[in-house]
Every structure is written in C-alpha cells, then in structure tokens.
Image (tube, rainbow, N blue to C red; front, side, top):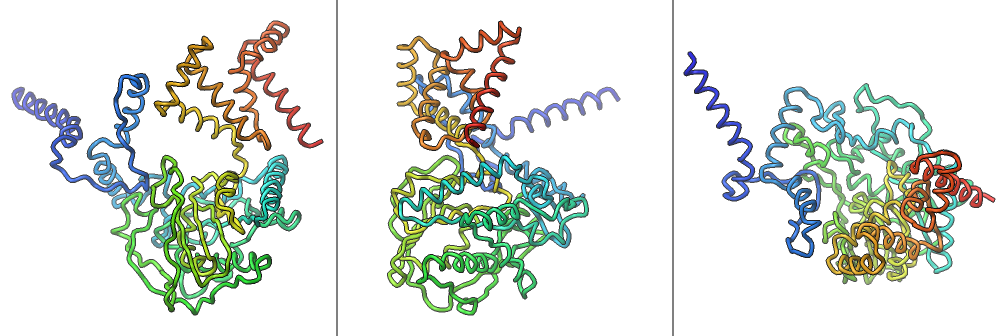
Length: 481
C-alpha cells in the first residue's frame, strides 16, 4: 500500500512540475499551438536588453512575460469555457454580464445604466467651462466643434439584462448632458433619441454578442449627426436608408468572445452596403506617431471623395466610429479619423495640423466623465513614462540629475511637471492630487510644509494634505469668482 502511495506522490509531483514548466518548454519548442488573444489588445513587444537600460529592464520584462507567456490564452480559454458552459455564469464578471436570451453586456456600462454616477454640481460647472472652452477655441480657428454621444447597449436594450441589474434612476449622465446642451448650446448631438425611435424596427441595432452597435444602428447615429451638422453646413444631407442594402454576415461578438461563448451563441451581424458604387477611397496619411496600445492600422484613417462637397471633417473616435466611415465618406472631400485613445480630449496640435472645417468627437455614454479627466494626472504620468522608456531622454535626465545633484526619479518628476505646465499653461485644469504632487516634489515648497508641521504638530503627510487642500480650495474659489 505504501508503495502505491509513494508512486502516486511521484506521479503527482512529476505532473505538477511538468505543468509548471509547460509554458516555458512550449515557448522554446512550440509543440502546442497557441490560441489567439481574444482581449483585443495590441501585441506587446519584448523589451530590448542593454547595459544602459538595465535598471528598467527587469520591470519591463516582468510586465511583458506576465501578459505574453506561452499557452496563456490556452489556459484562459479552458477556464472560461468550463465556467460558462457548465455553470452559465460569466467567467469574467468584471468584464462581461451574461443576459437573457443570448444577450451579453459590458460590465463597464452598469453605472451609466443604473444612473448612480451622475455629475455633481461642481462637476457640471467644470464640464460647462470645458466644453465652452473647446467650442470657443474651435470658433477662433474657423472650425465647428461637435460632440456626438453614443448610447450604451444597456440603455437601448435593458429588457435582456439579468434580474440582478436594477435601474436605480431614469435620469442618467446622458440626460444631464442633454439638459446642459439645451441651456448653453454646447453643440452636443443626441444620438439616443434616433436610436430609440428605430429600436423596434425589423432588425436589432446592437448585436446580442457584441458591445457595439451594428451597421444599422450606426446608420441611425449617422442620420442624427448629419441632421444636426447640416444646420451649419447646408450642403450636407444624409443619404436615405433605402440607398443601402441590408445584408447578414457571420462574425464573432467581442463581448461573448471574451468568455469563449461564441460557439454556443452563433449570430449573424447586420451590415449595410451602398447600392450604388462609392467613389470614396483611402487617402494619404500624415503618419502620426502611434500611441502605445493602439494598432497602427486603426490610429489614423483617411478617406477622400472627389464627388463630395469641398469640406474636410476630422472625427476623434473610438471603436464605435468604425461603422460610421462608410456613411460619412460620401459627404466630405476629405475625412480624417484619429483614435482618441479613449481620452476624448481636445488635441489642439492635431486639429491645427489637419485644419478641418468641422471636428466631431464621438464618445460612448459610459465614458462621459472622461471629459473631467484633468490633464495633470494622465499627462504627467505619460511624460514620466516617456522619459523612463526613451533611451535618449533617459540619458538627458541622468545628466540633468547629476548636474543638479538630484536623484534620477526626482529629476523625472520635475521634468514631467515642467512639460505639463509648458503644454497646458493656457488652460490649466487641476485637481487635489495635482497640489499634493506639487508639495511632495517641489523643494521650494518645503519651507511652508515644515512651518505648518511644527506649528500644528502634524506629520509631513498631514502637512502635505493640508497645504494641498488649501491651495485647491483657493483655485476653486478663484475659478468661480
């Protein structure tokens, strides 16, 4: 009996070690085919090793290996299929909600559906100023600026949601934006009303297994956008629905595919194709630098049409705008679409470079609070990462740090702050974290911190927080007076 137990232990040990080593061995010998990544991520490149970047290489390689080790997608595939097919639950509840009758939803849309993430009064003040500033800046440059809000799938087809997703409020962020537009004329285009008016037509407007609208849903979005912008550009008129054929094509929905549920939920996707031949074609790209996380093919898209009115349109887009291209390319001499990296900011340098007649910022309903993402947090982090990962910039940082008798990390922080101020000095938008960051990083403010700490017997952390709050409240007060 003992010998059998010993053999069993050996077998289990060998199996366990083999299982642990399997990804490493398969990475070298490629015996087991790799499953495709279904997370819609740009493929990460392996970091290059050099003595000059050895201090950053270990962190870069750890991040690369965690997301790219051999058989990673195979293991995820097996786990997700097991959880969904045997228990009919979402194996990725942080990303996917399994609804009724084969409908799937993106978890990130829940708050916008429930209405529990409304803008506060203060946020609405900031939002009004932000959107007014965008419109005014565009007007000064002879450009019309519009925001088109795409409704979430949940708010169009809530009847297929599971019973545990409860609508708390009928009043949503979307409604707040529409009210602001009525009061302040912010050039916001309400796509939702046109979508809902056609929801019960013959075909669905959002696919059951995908988070996006289909070609027909996009058409009604395009129809509403054209109706609004034609008030400023009278030569623009939307093509009627009967100028397109409705076809069906088999595709995998992005939401169901995240949990490997497409085989059990096959779906025909609705596609609209123009009955007459289009003269629109691909145009020459300017070749902008492609940000990390965006595929090269999708960052910059250009269409030209010799038969269209002599207008140039720039669309700052996300994935929802892809279905709009076939419609908009018929109306502009030149159509440029730039992926906005899901930040929805006003890229002044890009707009000046393109010099369009109009700019349309396409934004999904659940992303509306991105308009309040102040440049400081993301921009300073972006500059810091760029300084760390660029060999040339990092060498300059090391030289400056040595010259100023500072640590490299301290020099990166100061350089990032300088880049932020240099870029956003004309329209600084900051928050409490910005002032905390200043007091933690600027030597010139240490005297104020030390005085407060000694006077009130506070820790340095408490002093930083107190000074930051005082500066932030003054900033808010000055902003409203």
